[in-house]
Image (tube, rainbow, N blue to C red; front, side, top):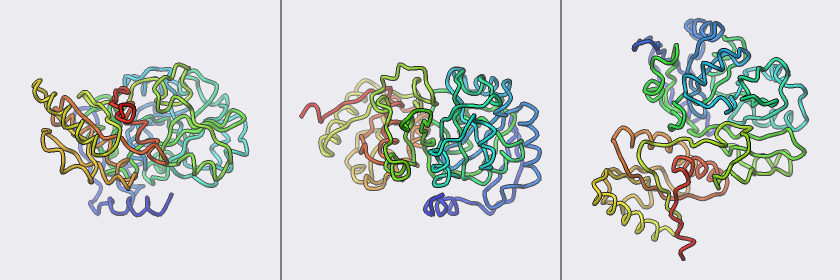
Length: 377
């Protein structure tokens, strides 16, 4: 895990003692990375071993975990999320040697990536072994595998037997949660337990790379960028549907086909020169307000002061700091839901490096509704 992520995590760790809360049917534990294996962890592991579901923090977003080798657990995950069953789940491990249990063979590309990026926010797609049920893989002969760096996630995986299938811990289609309160909002009564580990350092789901073909292909962009992967593997391709929204193939990775990350309000992304984007967003906000809608703007630090017509203006971070933007995106979308914002307008962002992942999530949240001022120029 990069040092800047370790530093971010340390800043978020609390000195509070572990506490147990109950709310309706779902039990909530508070467990932070400075004490990731309290006595309660054994109980949480037993829940998963017995076919139950536990939501837990990772360095990317909160995950909804069940036994990855138990087909009935995977069915429960799909049901809890309201997720289509052809949308594959990621199996999380916490020991390098467990990779061999899940796959028919480990290619050299996977070895190189694991040595460089695991534990961390990278998911690899490989040809599955017979140990992995197709209920976990969405009916495919491939399996998506990740070794998270979050210490609480690692301890839960180990205490539950070593293989946790886990998508993001939200209702299907909604923004992924980076705070436990949003997990509870979506899944209270649908899961057995939630681990509250505080806020999340990265804020976007892991990079997914398909290693089953001749050339590695990025199916979902994330914190581990194409440039970083290319440093290790050489030639790496990017699935062309990542930013254009025209994915028609059966999905090999989570989030390729279906609309994701969407707030309740209608979201439009405005792309172009900075001053033109500000002007157009203000125009669109005025139109929406005249129609009686509550309005919100997702703004960079550099431009936030210019949006004075919206009901709510959220600063997502500096345009020069993609990591700030990535860490804030889902939280902001959830906050707009809390405020009953009906029309949301966002500035567009760079489509280089981590910006590819940011724009991928933003465009999916908007249903690819954009105003492209570059084309109008």
